[in-house]
Image (cartoon, rainbow, N blue to C red; front, side):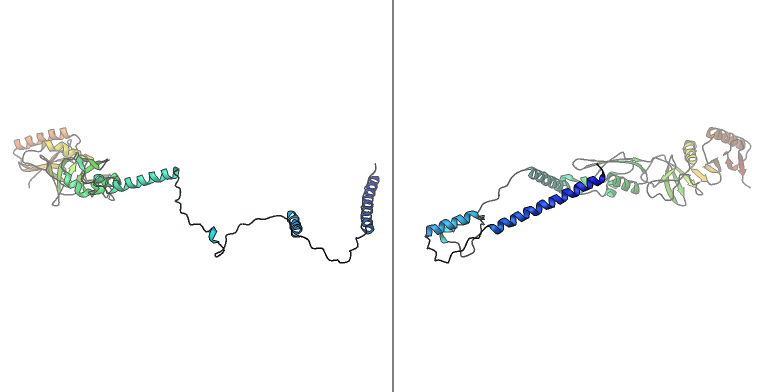
Length: 334
């Protein structure tokens, strides 16, 4: 079938549909015109209907209508005496559930925290000090500031800082807080090997060259009288705030330890920035062994040989230096 034929067929179908619609409308108009309207009779008085008839008519009409019931509270003054009722009171019903359990736990925690922060049994008083040798427990507790403080709020790191800031000779601290309020502090003190005297001030020095204030008494401690400042160690930090500071080099500290047992009776160690460590020999001269403990045995051997030779020749030296044992020298009074 060609496209022209197809389009004609569709046009014809549309036209026929329109004709059928028009014929249907005409038929409906003819029916309306041909149906005679009833002639309204003359107005005659309606017979009076009985109350039952009127009731049935109202009921029939009400059946055709939708019914809506709306409840309304009577306004003041419309309540009849027979409808009045006395007010009733009822307590709210309490139901126990997970929320009450959570509330109980929170309440218990709050009470425990209150007692833990305020009861005397949980307040720290004095710390037990262990490992101390020259420091006393009273001195340490004086700087702690933990008296009548809740043990739960104590900061061990802050306690360690306070101890090291107040006592430079302490190089190790361990703080332990036990239930309910027991504080135990273990400290480690530096052990002095010499008392360094310079410009009228005295500090103690340990084997590593760290200096710290004098505290207490150490029997047999060697005193070093310095004529000048020692070399600055490489580990010295000018920004250091707490703790002992490096004061002597490792070589000079080792030399003090090595020379101390050989100091003659009645003599004292001395330090000269140029000649190093030595002592004032009671026989009337200054002996120097340098700034380090290298070849210390050879230095003692050479020194003793020079002393024997000089005394045998009747020479009274003023200074003997064996800092370099391969090239020792002496000086006499002019």
